[in-house]
Image (tube, rainbow, N blue to C red; front, side, top):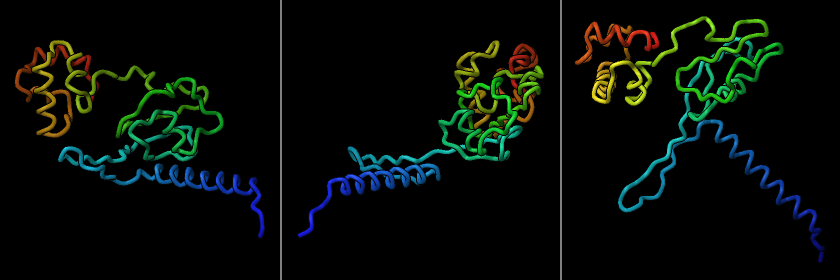
Amino acid sequence: MPTTNPRIGAIVVVLALAIAIGAGAWYGSRGGSPVAAPAVGGVSYTTVAETIIVHVSGAVRRPGLVTVPSSARIADVIAAADGARLGADLGGLNLAATVRDGDQVVVPMLGEAPPGSDNANRGVDLNRSSAAELEELPGVGPVLAARIVAFRESNGPFSVVEDLLDVGGIGESKLAAMRDAIETP
């Protein structure tokens, strides 16, 4: 009767684990599919692997749209674009910053001005901000912030800042007070 070498058994176990981990990583990178959790107390919970789409451009190997997990950071977006090109200036970017669906990440080359250094308006985003974030606007409290969110949800995104005039409680003077703190849609 042949004897089994313990080293071969250990190698088989290590290979099986490596294959399982690789398959899990590959499946996870594809966004997965909804997984139904067992019903608890008569309520069924479903977990969905959430992904977002981000536009990456500039000094990356494959600029364009990339799909990343909703918890992704700028470093993950650059990696999804096959990494930065030689000569990219990553020092001006906050690689740990989180990204949201629809964001754009611009990776500059050495010697180029970093993105956002053109004094562009970087205020509160009317189309993405929560009610709590909208309260950072001058003259906006919880009630008005809730109205802005409700208006956005029922009418779609704001096209121009002046669309706020259609929200109850916002007139010309309130809009004038808020205008400089709003990111232009």
